[in-house]
Image (cartoon, rainbow, N blue to C red; front, top):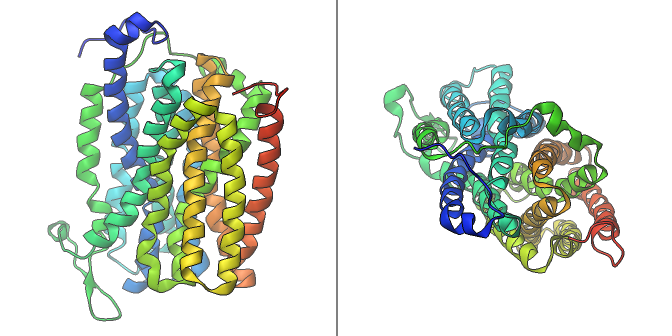
Length: 428
């Protein structure tokens, strides 16, 4: 593929003549590589649910920890991945960061076949799944360079939203693929469940190895490194001195942090409160990811700050309803309330990311996108851990939800004061 030597998406003639074509190609490849990254990152949210059924003997807290560790590592790696696109080039980094996802996929496939596998090994494999978590920051930073400001919200919403779909994909596909011995030729006997039926839990990991290899090759031949986007880490690091970097980080933690944290915890949460419905766990992540592009589109149309205010109020109401229906032990109300939380978090993930390119100049917006995403990803560690603590100390996840409501209340005030009032510092 010919190397791109000119890039100016704000020039309408260039955009229509050449830019749009390259941008769309890179966007759709980015979507599928990011989807696989989320699959690997959130694999433990479903694998952990089945471990004790096949002979492992872990406590609830240990299982919640396995689901949470990829979030901790992934969030930490995002700080590195944020600056990687500017340092190494978009295509180069996507190829590398996608290819390495095969390592935890292969490792988990072998480890789950033996109930005597040490817990420490499981923790290492959970940590390696954090490699998938890092990809979001670099992927969004990369795509932000390709689009003009007026289309960034929609483009970032599509990339992030469909990429986020990997969470629901892994939660939906895993229960299906573990029922057949597809990869038994690799050395995988089935595991016998307490009811006498058989599963192949290794399939949950092995099934993703070939798609990872294919998309690594597609990214190598199909994506581009853009000119004039490389920056040293020091040049990009100026963003930490910007007040609005930290405000937007807080807001993105409230939206995307909630989405990814709830996604990691929801399967285990269902199993501990309404175990007969654990098969519906994928719905939350699916709806949140589906509505993220809607959040970007609505923000391009009506303004990101206005959409974000509506979202945060809705999330507060959703969390209160979850607490109410938990107390009533009414599953339908609990599920619908939690799905409302997921949908609002998905829309808010798109709206907050649309605000960033409006607030910051292009060369700062890309690292800010990655930086805020890095902090928000800690939600996938702290939310499952907080739910685990809440269950251990009070026997209910309701205590954790009160913390989230307080966080949302502060977020509403910050968003209105800085971005969504008549005399706000930045109108967006």
